[in-house]
Amino acid sequence: MLASGKTSKYFLDMKAVLTDGSDTISKIADLILQRFPEDVSAVGGLAMGAIPISAEIVSRNNKVSPDRLLHYFWVRPDEKTHGLGGLVSGTLLSGDRVVIVDDVTTEGNSVMKAIRAVVASGAKVLKVITVVDREQGAAEKVRSEGLKFEPLFTSSEILQA
Image (cartoon, rainbow, N blue to C red; front, side, top):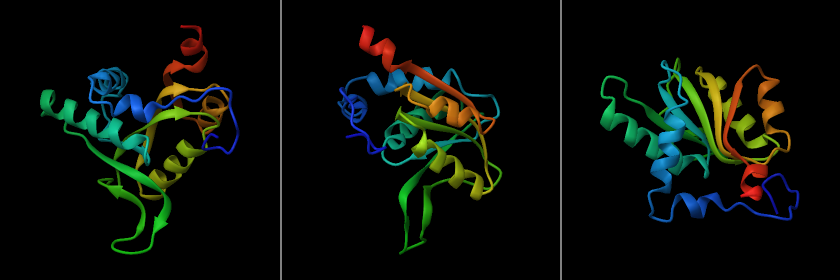
């Protein structure tokens, strides 16, 4: 079962791929960083998929580009009602220029939730980058909001390999 509630004939377990201790996450982070606009200041997305990706992007970027330090955040599935509360954790500042990342997109509901939380925080979304787009509507949904959407890979590319 997918996050959208739909069923699929295949499952892409990107969380296992990105957290297996190999250098895959570093390679993914490098590919994503190559697609960052110059004026980006923060990266993040919906927990859990965006957390390891964002952390690796910031770590890699900040070692080689100390003149352009990035920070990251994540959007909770549900609003936190204790502590500081809210949907957003980590560092997201009003005025930040943000790239939303995700491990897998299907219909785009998760990235849209992250986009709405970022905008509500006073930051601006520059683009959405996903590791794999399942090609089931996410691209169209994000682009209908006037935002750029870039997959590193599509499910059709992966399934043909």
